[in-house]
Image 1 (cartoon, helix red, strand yellow):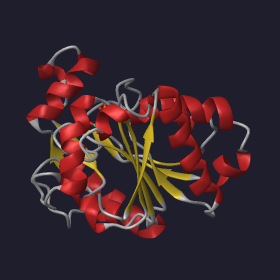
Image 2 (cartoon, protein in one colour):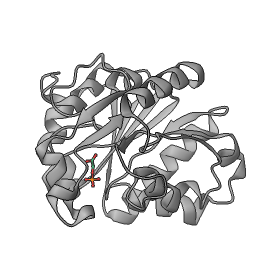
Image 3 (cartoon, helix red, strand yellow):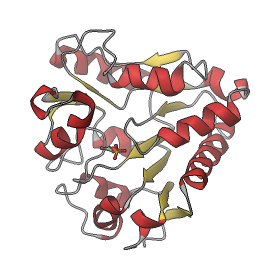
Image 4 (cartoon, protein in one colour):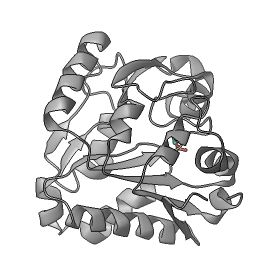
Length: 242
Ligand code: PGA
């Protein structure tokens, strides 16, 4: 493994959640009004529960935190339960009273919305702490395979693998919105600290490619090899090929 990564391998889901929460709090404690982005998906759920259960009273951490959305579907109404922003509000933003929120407006014209978010990020960025999940196809947020490393905030066509994976939230593949808006790989490359959360044997192969394979747009997460200050938190199943 590249020496620029710190790798924490957790023995069980509770240890994974605790390790992620502890690392995140440690970074928050060392930051002043940090700009933070957070992932959706199955992987971070225990992490969010650990934050809410163990650190909800850390108002010093939450009051100054500025949250910027990592990605969002296009074309949903503002209050749709399936928006990533709705999911994050329920799981973490509301329970921890994180009030400073920069969100994508899913219902807006996507091209105008990315221009708005780009100029917003120019004003409020760079990102201090990026917490990320890893797609089974190597994506990071909606930076799907083939996305150039220099990409800024953009509209993305969801890859067929992503649509298939996300169908579990929509009931059927053809109901999954085909387009999303996402922070780009250049925005994420500028993050001062990155925490990558990965669990399960189905991610073992792609995690190895991301961290130890060629740096290639075919595996968007391989951009992480160009960064310093990356902490990978994985379970044994995901880390078994490293
Ligand atoms: P998952 O999603 O945590 O549900 O596996 C990760 C991702 O697609 O980024």
